[in-house]
Length: 309
Image (cartoon, rainbow, N blue to C red; front, side, top):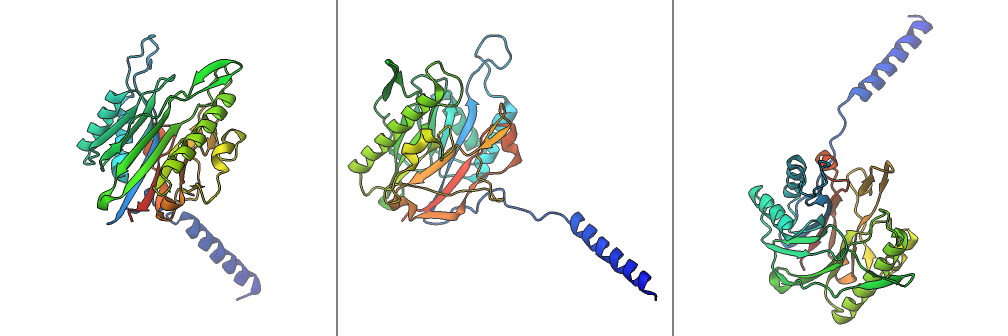
């Protein structure tokens, strides 16, 4: 066999091998983290993208609830992840939160305890569902600030809940949804900066009152961790609070897709004090990448798992 034919066959073999590799079915990646086991619990927090009545048909009346198909997708994703605690943003009222609770129950995922924090100056509030009893879920004190002598309230407030875990353990959760980047005549950036400062001050107060209690701070902060507006939240000492690194199966950390800007952002964040961070199960924590989420919300849910003791 001459040299030219040998070279041709070798080249063909290499091309066929590369073609076969390219046509090989892509390796499956996990859409959800492994389930929490005995002595563990998982918490999910999720911006539901206006789980509320709104003017969706353009008739000038805010009387249209989130479409059934979108609600079905949200319920399916949450029920599949099976969190023991679920913190949700953009819930219209307690009736909407009850509706979500009922739908999850019908899907086989019971979260019997419920807490809703009505907004101060926004169309939606904060909700929390739990498999464990809620010992204390009274609303935090009203928070106000001033911009150019104009008094403003933290639009959605801060939800502070104590959860009674098994074996006499407890967990404190501070849940927040800071001012979005939507236009406001007072200046949305300055509003978010003030809300972030008040949140940081409030968390420090809880740490002084309950220095040994496991503490988790979570929610949609409306901006990325490196932004100047969130500097007061993300400059805590690791001995005080630390951000828990969570990503999807591809290593991506974005949690929000801006349809207006056609860009991805990391706005949903979870922080823990050392008493809780030492129990974090990183291998069972994940940002959910289920395609069903895209049709139901512009945010992705975050799951974080912990040891109870």
